Length: 252
Image 1 (cartoon, rainbow, N blue to C red):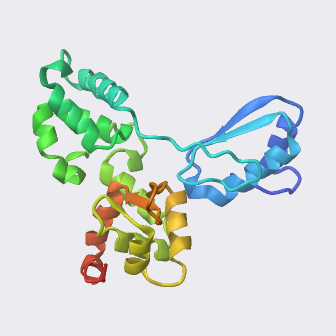
Image 2 (image 1 turned 120 degrees about the vertical axis):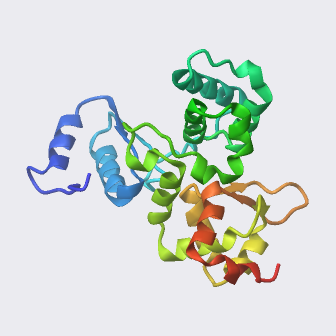
């Protein structure tokens, strides 16, 4: 992807020639760290190869003409429970989730149905019971650190996932996310404008929404502002950077 361009003989030209008269699905996986190159390649493919459909996975949209964005939602409680049980049996043969259904449900709920977090929690069953795991989720960034060695480093622990997302942000986006980390749960757009400050608050929040670090919910009837909730990484990052004290004193 880094070689996207139009010079004769380069990889992109060869790919376009190969795909020009074919009908196929091309998957571009994990595009967020090469988002510009991925967008350029996808745009060239779609323009030159009418039979090609591009399926791109990324933390943010590519922003190319004709793109349809399909957010990956958290797992449903039933599916999350099943994933935990499957991973649990792999690390503790004979494990029966029905022996402590309440603890398993609490783990899946408090981890927001996030597949990687649930898998990392299940890995802790080598030494902890479901109840012991659930009781320690307040310190999840130290608890969920036992991913498979075959995964990419950024997918092996929950802190690594958060750090990966954080490192891809601009300084302005990091500053906004640090400010928003003072909220627990949701917040209105007006509250965000107060704590973030500046003339580009809406633009910054939009960027964080696009990058899947803020979830925007449609306002309920009778409420003007859009509600939003930050992912777990938002609250973890602020204190680490030492910026929390500076924003807690901001007026509501």
